[in-house]
Amino acid sequence: MENITNATLVKDMIDLFGGLRFRNMNLFNVNGMRLLLNACAETLEAIMVYPTDPRGKCISHEDAQSLADDFAALSSLQDFDLSLNKSLWTLQVAAVDIDEALETGPPNPVSNFLEHTLSTIKSIEFSGVMVIHGEDDFRGEQSTQHHRRFELFREVHEVQDFSLILCASVWEPVVDHSVRMLEEAIAIEKEKGGFDRSFPQPSVTDNPQETRADRRI
Image (cartoon, rainbow, N blue to C red; front, side, top):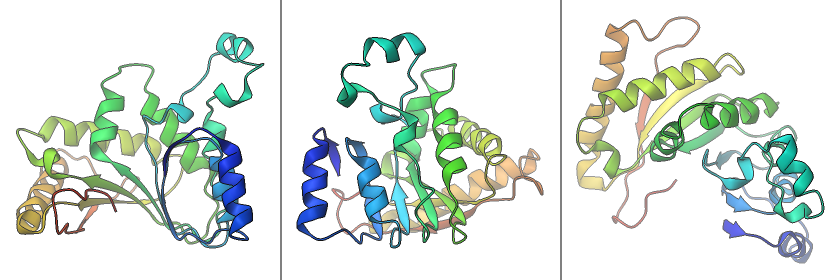
């Protein structure tokens, strides 16, 4: 679901169907996100979130005061509360969105976003953060980007223990090549001493796409 600004619409949808039982959700700029997450408290297994989501933007005290009369306009990390989702096992995020957020410079919005979201997870089933790599992520020199992402996840790993999974979500004919590139990135980082007991080596998986149009899990 993307760009849903009317929380009433979300509530009406939940009422109409007598609740929701989604196992997977992909959410960006959804007003009423907490309603959706709570409605799927017993069933949600995987959720894809976006560090660049405007509803995950940290708000200054001054901004909060100026927007106090317009609740719908308030964006807050509080929307990303996964504490009630008992079956959640993976948090998904796209590599391109991580890079975009990191490019904004300090303060690091992606670190704040992921630390907050991970800190809310209480599910005993939770085990992994999956980074989705599309075809564009395999073009050109990527060693610097990979290293920056690994450093980020080392930092947020202190908040919540998880296994890092790199997923090649690419057109089927280039899956094997893309998987090898991710494995090479891990090997390079390992040589640099980037993994240890406090931040274990990631694993690699794939999600072949039948067409170039579909890039999301």
